[in-house]
Image (cartoon, rainbow, N blue to C red; front, side, top):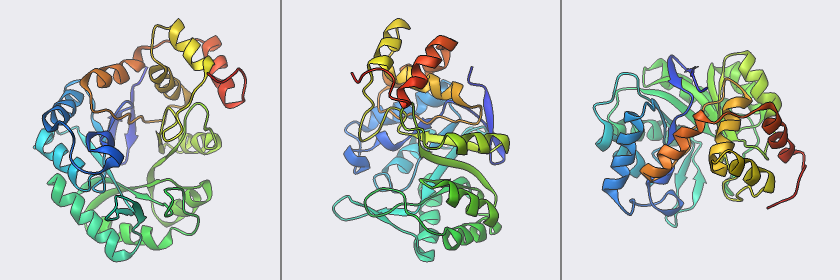
Length: 289
């Protein structure tokens, strides 16, 4: 059911792995169990994952250091995607980091900590001080990334946490190979954007597949999961895989058991009847759990 999709210059399996949960709470500091974190990364690759999403502001630096320790030298088919555009405050806050100097430094930090000569895909993450989307032009930061791509430090450029208008603007400035936004069964503001990108062969990478900071609670989702002898997160991931062929998933976990659970979502068979029930969640059909 999953298959593969083109991400920049590479082909990746549609079920990947997100490294954010490898580090400490709020993506800050080291993991509780470093050996367990390394084991999860190795198990993901052993199970066929060849798309890992990360950032040097996870930790900061911790996630990339773990990836390097666990997997370097990297398998030829492994695609590591990182993101820049933020930094961590002394109190662990998430702060915008959009200046030319900050963006260049972030690329070099990722290169150093991942031990790479070039980054396969770099997502520019647009964000405001409250962790939400930042409106406004992306011309300045994307011009910097385009220059770094010309220098051979970046192979492809993506966008994260952006509006459809920003995607349109970004694609006029440089080639955009992926868009990474908040999207799931209940949060479907990007439906039209996903379909538009699919027609153009551009990947869409949803984050918060089960709600994120405000977890999705739905009796419909729970009932479907029970009927399939699956978990709600498995059903949510399976729905995303069915939603559009350009959707790439990056569920994260610090547990090998949960990793196996997430990857097995690809085996779920969602009938048309089940899909209809799940689609009703975004329309408010049914009752909350």
